[in-house]
Length: 309
Image 1 (cartoon, rainbow, N blue to C red):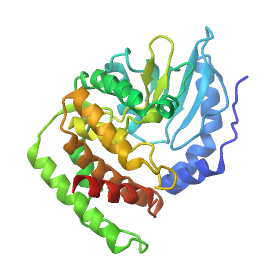
Image 2 (cartoon, rainbow, N blue to C red; image 1 turned 60 degrees about the vertical axis):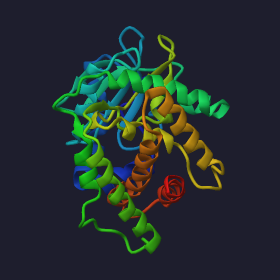
Image 3 (spheres, one colour; image 1 turned 60 degrees about the horizontal axis):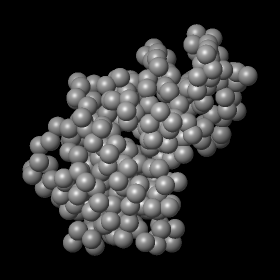
Image 4 (tube, rainbow, N blue to C red; image 1 turned 45 degrees about the vertical axis):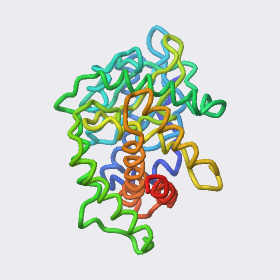
């Protein structure tokens, strides 16, 4: 049964409105009609949405009963076009297949990974095994040729750590020092390496799903170009939270960086340095999007600062 008028969680609506203002409000108002039109055009039966973050994402059935995923971005969001372009280039031995993309409406249809359990299920049994699995996926992704549509990692970092960044009053001195420390390390890493590898940009446990035609398929590539250690660092700190929720997070981060450095021929110290930068950057991105810090990113950065010295 098609859901032409999906019930959207308040948290999702509020997030869209906070980030996109009037544009987001218009998009939300027109979303039911857009879903209905896309369902007719692509002969889809659209189901109840998944847990929504920044895009509308829902399971769907194609005209031949195939399992698909419908993803629609807020009007004007350019990331979904980069994602579609990346999915056309990344080997389908490690990635879901792009079925079709409607650039005028920011909507894409992809293969659905079945059963679709995240890498977290394996990590709960063996974090070491999960690290080895994701290492193979990184290798597959990095074989992709960069494209002019991909985002520059250096550009993202420059924008993230702008000197005139507006910080909330709740930021304390220790957190300011972490931000400054990340800037120093970023400058050093940038001077030491000039790598132009195609990167996923956000490959963590939730973006790697179990599948049938091949054991694991990745989703949601951010399509970036830069240093491989940046890509690995995102996994190293995911999905770790507070010290109470993840008391062994120090051990996990060290072990993950060691396993993947050995498997991929990388420098574990650079992975951990990028992990520190990414933990701080996660806080800055949250500040930019929502006006406040999460706190957990800064906590991870403090632990990583102790590790890297």
